[in-house]
Length: 303
Image 1 (cartoon, rainbow, N blue to C red):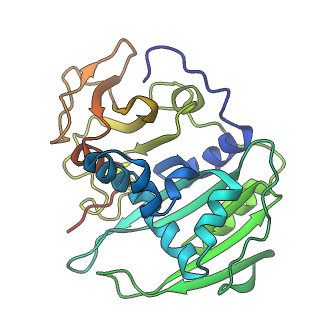
Image 2 (image 1 turned 120 degrees about the vertical axis):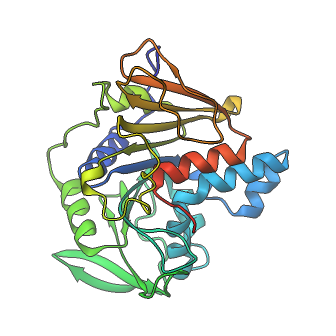
Image 3 (image 1 turned 90 degrees about the vertical axis):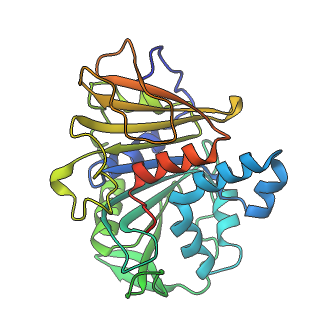
């Protein structure tokens, strides 16, 4: 994916473990440092152009449900998470179209990881949540009204684990499985990309990345999953942000002989020296390209 070896010494073991846990259940993974969870007003104040503001809004798309869920149980919960945890990973799968206008829904699990060398407040306020025993897990639960285009309220399950993780999911079984794996003594299998590259070497050192395995056999709704227009020879997508240089790129995993072209607002990909990897560089301030990539990666088509 990346031609030269990456320095991923800043990627903590806890983050690698969280990515491993999510990769066993989900086809889409997204990682960000928690600075992105700052209020829209604070983020806008730090940016220098309308294009940067729009691009940051696009990057926040995969974390909109996390922000909405936490805001529903306390005014300070998003800020509390940002202060006590350094990064958040999202796993998403089972994409479902709305009834009419609205966002695509999916089964999701968020895992926040404590900053390296610090101990988070293990009980930041979830004022409106209800204590609940979930398969032996001392969790909290709450619900929010249905999203536009969907008829059922969304139920959330959350727990703090060992002062290292905060887990939040919108599906009970997903929540149980993630918590059990994080509590296990042994680490799971590390994330490996279709061409054999270790995920840690590819994604480590970046403060934002998204990865999507295109498993068409498990898609419940091809249109909602956002893969109807993706060539069948594309195995996976990876979107990596180099925010320090205002750049990003998408790597397309395909062993085809011709460039797989399907993202309308990004340059045509070129074949890298690494087998099975095509790459397209994207200016991070190009909000349209950023949004198109994340919609393709997260199955969040807006109807």
